[in-house]
Every structure is written in structure tokens, then in C-alpha cells.
Image 1 (cartoon, rainbow, N blue to C red):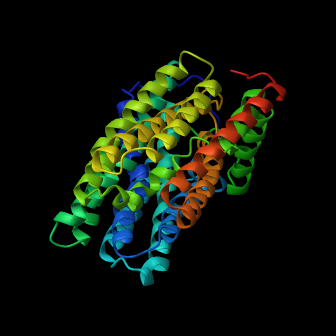
Image 2: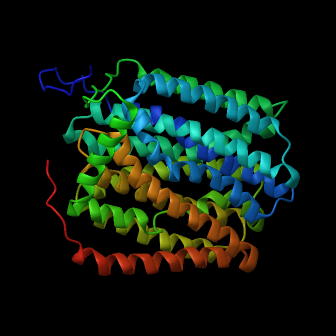
Amino acid sequence: MEHSDTGLEPAPRTRHPWVWALLYFPFGLTFGFPSIALGYLASRAGVPVSAIAGVVGMTWLASGWKFTWAPLGDYTLSRKRWYLIAITLVSIGFVAMSSLPIEPATVPIFSAIVLATSLAGTFIAFATEGLMTHNSPPATRGRSGGWFQSGNQFAQTAGGGLGLWLIKHLPQPWMAGAALAGVLWLCSLGLIGLEEPPRHTRHPSPLARAGEAWRELVALLRQRAGRIALILAILPIGTGAAQALFGSVAGEWRASADTVAIVLGLGGGLAIVAGCFVGGVIADRMARPASYALACALGVLACAGIAFSPRNELGYTISTLFYTFTVGMAASTFTAMVLAIIGDTAAATKINLFFALNTLFSLGMLRANGWAHDRWHTNGMLATEALVGVAALLLFAALAPRVRGELLTE
């Protein structure tokens, strides 16, 4: 029978938080490779932007519902075992994506492969989140959250750009998928030396374990801090939805494949990591919900910056990098807000409710962006995201003072 932690075990050896960036990188790559590499190539193959948004949306769909199966990550196999199983399945998915010809007729097949790969990738998230919560002392969780999101966001940008560069320059497209699989296994070396969390449950059956996880979640949502975080998770702000289509609209700025790979890849990776660290600093200096709202407001301004930027490669570079910087700020401030309230038990289930709801509404914004682009072109898409963001921020400002609930318990 499994027993809850008695408090007598020694605390786990503290690891530098860069390890969370390394371990979470593969999860971000399940977003970055389809959105940047496949998105760019599909647009050049005559696939409509709305259809590309549907394919990319499969990554967000999996993340949007992952909280429903998060108890499997909390209460079944060890975190390390789930991590290794997940990167094996994601590796297969990357090879399949890079092997299939991209054309309008193959869009449904791509959607299925991307969805299956993303479902496997959610267990990378569960494993990393559980290990991070257990191996990070409370005083260092802000920094841990910043590194954690920097790995995710760097993979969504630089990792996706790397995938595009590999497809364009290697002799056969499938080699790009194989190379990315190798990157995933290198990241798994970060598991070495990490301590597995103890089982915080006395219930042996899967249903009882899931019930315990959900009771922990309900207790969190009775608290005022949990309810404010829930509102912010639901509102369609800080989504970074336009970023998922930057590769698809690059032709409007006459940006070449190599420019897109660099700007959305290495350049975007550096910008988003910088945003993650700046957001982490801000979150430590002001109320965390307010820091997230500030980051989202900067994202609205970034949409306007792209819309009014010169239609050349320099305009594309500067405006999209600033938008990407604000996405990093939003990711790290949101993560800091969630880590501050979840406690130690059922970590993956609690974290993923907030992350998943945020992702679901981001998916809605992504589909709205694709729809707006097909009707009003790129500036119409950017105006749609900006106006929705302004409305959501005003709604939060009106609702937050009226939220009631229990005080946060430490």
C-alpha cells in the first residue's frame, strides 16, 4: 500500500533550475515544429491559412484537454518512466510528419498525426511538472517557472525554426524528423539525479486516485487566488495565437525561408527567453495576476506594431520579435501565478487545469485569427486579436475586485 509523505524524508537535492528548461524543451517542440516548419511549407504548397490554423490547432487541442487525463501522470507510472515513453512516441510522430508530402489533400492526415503526437507530448509536461514541483523548494519556484517556460517557449520558436532549416537543407525530409528525435533523447539526460516525488495517496485504485486529485483541485478553486487565476486562464489574452501563423503570413513581408527560420527560430527563441526572464522579474516585484495582465497588454500593443510595420524583411523581423518577447513575458508571469497557489500534491492535475483552460481559449483565438485572415487579410487578423485582448483586459479589471473566496493556505 502506498502512503503519504510523513515529512521525515530528507528534502531532495536542489538542482539548478536550468534542468527544467532542458526537460520541457521536447514539449515545446510538439508546438514549434508543426506551427513554424509545417506552417511555412504548407503555405507555400497552396494550403489556405485557415486550414493551416486547423492543423496547428491540433497541438493546442491536446493541451487544452490534458487536465482530464493528468491524474494518470500524477498517480500511475513514475514521472521518469512516463517521460521516456512520451519522447519515444513523439519521436515517431516527428519522423511521420517530416516524411509525408505537404499538400491540401494530406491536411487531414497531418491533423491526425499532429494530434496523436501532441497527446503523447502531454505526458512530457506531466512528468516535468511533477518532478519540478517536488525538486524545487518553494523559495525557488519563481525562478524554476521562468526556466521551465523558457525551455518550452525556446522550443516553440528556435526548435520550430531548426525543424524548418533541417527540412530545407538535409537530403531527405524524414532526416529532419530523425534529427529532432535525437534532440529529444539528449534532453532526457536531464532526468539523471532527479528525485521521484512520493505518492501522496492511500488509494490503490486508479478511480480513487483520480478522485483524490480532483478533490485537491476543488479545494484550490475555493480560494480567492485560485478563482482569480481561473478567470485569467479563461480569458483569451496572452495567447500568442498570431505567433503560430507567422510562418504562414511571412510571404506578405517577402521573407525568405532562411529569414523565417532565423527570425522565428533562433531570433524568436532568444526573444521569448528574454521575455520569460523579464516576466519572472516583474512577477517577483508586483502582484502576480497584475504582472500577467501587464504582459498581455504589451502583447496587444505588439499586434498593432506588426500591423503597421513596413512590408519588408526588416519590418517582419523587428515586429514579430517584439510580439514573441511579450509571449515569453505572458508565459512566465502566468506560470509564476499558478506555481504560487498549487501546493505540493496532485501537481500535474492542478497545473494543467489552468494551463489547459488557457490553451483551449488560445485555440479559439487561433481559429478566430485564421478565419479573420481569410476574410480581412493579415491586418484584419491582428486587429481581431488586439480588440479581443482589450475587451478581455477590461473585463478582468471589472471582475477581479468582486471575486470572493477563502484565503490562500500555505
